[in-house]
Image (cartoon, rainbow, N blue to C red; front, side):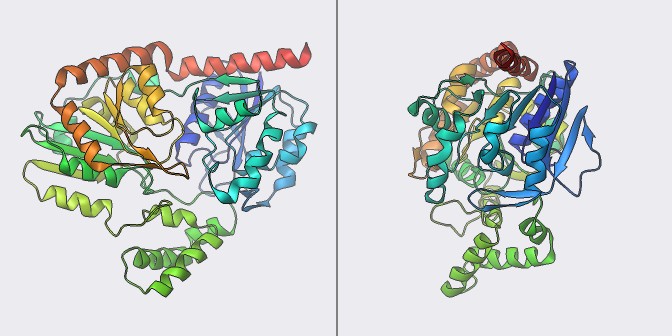
Length: 450
């Protein structure tokens, strides 16, 4: 098959969407297919091919709500005219999907769409956008979802859309079929008898690092030394257009500094009213997230403040790190518990990675975490409320209680870890998952020709 993929970002950009598309694209190539991905131009990209996947770059940014900018017509023409057998787009609310909405009827080749959660479904600024979504969804040959019960698939069902397929996410068997390095704990300064907890996610303020650190500060691990690894990268500005340039520039750093002052209460209330609207108007809302803002009441305490407080305690230690990938895999393999307190997700890859490592996980009910716990048998869900805009609000006291119970129950941890590893091997490797996508592609092609 000649497969055309489309995704707003692709490596070297880092993120869950990028990783899923990289895994699928490279597996398709390994299975003998010809693969091209249409994605955003990145100045740091050194090659127009990666892992056998050809990269077609477009200087496009934005979405239908914020406005589309750049080479929109060139992208549309590429999708309409390029020589391929099947086309797949990942995620709504970004340009590779939104730019095609006026021309969906003109795409003659089989087309597949992965909605990827509809994160803005409950936000007022996206009300008109999602009112049009059922009409757009009907124009795709197949819709692929990661969960059986989530806001995207539920919207499709509510409008009687029937071309639905569920394919889960997974973890890379090439990464996780490695031996545990017994020297890892020593390199990290973690005693072999310590209880070690791990979390992974970008340091945006939305992945729950601060909430987890507070819960770790409160939990009782029975007098053992206790260590917490908070792994996360600081997101880099991606993409094309004025906001991306501004974010990379000295001006962006000045604005970030002003926002940081705003965050810690260093300037007046009037200045607070000025800084946030400027950032949002310029499309730099990511800076607010980077500084710890979700759509909720702000706090002046950062994750680093909590870490410093933890490290003042006896027999307890926490670190914020961004480990190289090989070391991060070893962190999974050498930890006792993976804990996840994210505020907004769709189908978190990190839970599959924990299962792949045989590492039991504890997660709040974000995205389809509850379903992943059931599918893998590798995790426990800690109750948490979800607000009207769809953000999970973590109760750190409740999370601390769950950590304490699991730390005191090594038999349960062993059982969860073994279940997760076994079920991952059977169902959730990227090799198996990529073949499920290929089956969908073949069915769509047969439907078009038959």
